[in-house]
Length: 147
Ligand code: HEC
Ligand code: HEC
Image (cartoon, rainbow, N blue to C red; front, side, top):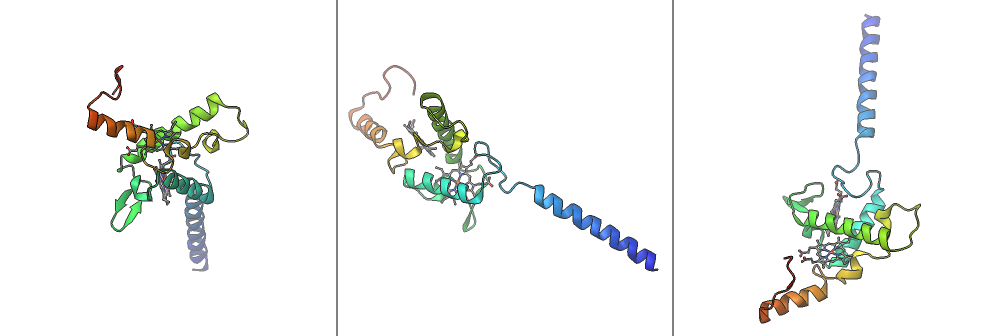
């Protein structure tokens, strides 16, 4: 009887250990395609706030709604992928055209940042003006092809 209890206890503690290690290995963030997987909560938070400020928007501009809250790892909001290509663009600009600290992950370089172009607006002000003019004057925005 004592033996059976001991065996059960061993099985139980082994199961608990497996459970704890799986929970520890599971990444904190589930859907990062550009930012590093091991990014700290504080760093992710400050980057997300900088995006919101640079574009003059709230979190839900890029993140899909789920009931009354937001589903941050979902990609249902297409703006999130727009933002990802902008992140890649910004990384490339910083890495290819400026001197930079090679010990820093290029994601964190900010010689050029979102704000440099966006100036607190979801559509950079110069581009917005061009698009408005295009609407009123009916002149092509990109006369040499493109969009
Ligand atoms: C301009 C678009 C944009 C705005 C605004 C924005 N985010 Fe994000 N957020 C992203 C993108 C893009 C990712 C995914 C990054 C990647 O793939 O590496 C992300 C990822 C996240 C994640 C990680 C989700 C996971 O588990 O994969 C959290 C949490 C998050 N954002 C919170 C916020 C909060 C809170 C705000 C508002 C303060 C905010 N975001 C505003 C674009 C945005
Ligand atoms: C070199 C200038 C530049 C930088 C840097 C830049 N953007 Fe942009 N962004 C633009 C331009 C220009 C557009 C409009 C593109 C178009 O309409 O074709 C745009 C559009 C966007 C859009 C789509 C807005 C909409 O209403 O459709 C998002 C989202 C965005 N940028 C997020 C970001 C984020 C996040 C960063 C920083 C990681 C960033 N951008 C950095 C120039 C820039």
